Length: 58
Image (cartoon, rainbow, N blue to C red; front, side, top):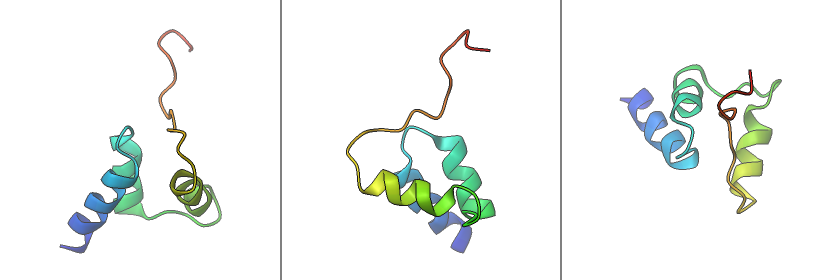
């Protein structure tokens, strides 16, 4: 059940990015990459994060 609780926590932290929340919950946030910095930045700012590119940006 730990993965389910982690998924709930990450889903609340990243409500607009379910794919990123799922990845963080199952694989953990990599401290050598963007995991902890991203989580801290999301908690300390009111600005939402847009993790999906706009349509046609490819």
